[in-house]
Length: 265
Image 1 (spheres, one colour):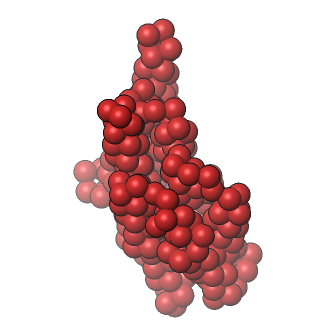
Image 2 (cartoon, helix red, strand yellow):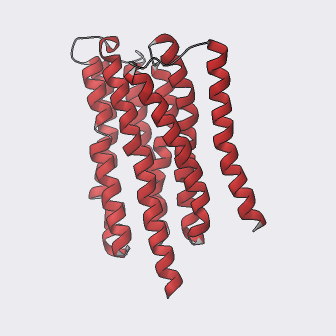
């Protein structure tokens, strides 16, 4: 009970610290969110949703068996890191009407590898998984992110960088649809895990497609990214609801389901 109370206080403390930090930044800048600033509103909504999700995932660790706790912890870390970054991104947007590329990639360079680790973790909870699965997912993720960043930050021509990033993404998709991770899921996972695995890889396919589409329209159509900043930021913000929060909820659902099934045996 003491440890449960400590975790509860810690989770609430994370939300309190985030709220205080946001209030202090707003007070220091004197900036106010305008009612017609829909991008700014989306920044606020996703920030609150990420903070609430973080508290939820950490508290729900008490409901699952030990082998699933790491998966929920990682889900909570993903939303926590993203929430902290959104606290800054939304204030910069409200003050300047811009969202620097570096903010997005600082977030993605931490959270996207953690999301990829989740595929390895949910399989590891039900069977022995070779370390090669972990490293292939990590390498594909790093190639994808580095390629995208080099193109968006101007360190590399946008077309070659786009191709590199897409190659990394394709490598990830191969691993989770036809590679060793997919085969282990099909051969060893119970139905609930297989269902979660399938939904997670659909998110990686459909949800993550939003980012290269945004890159394409922002950098490869002839118009500068500034011209489509509003649309891009709104799309990216809404995409994070699916790619971070919903992704974590899928893992939470299978963790609870498998833990309850094991407890009944």
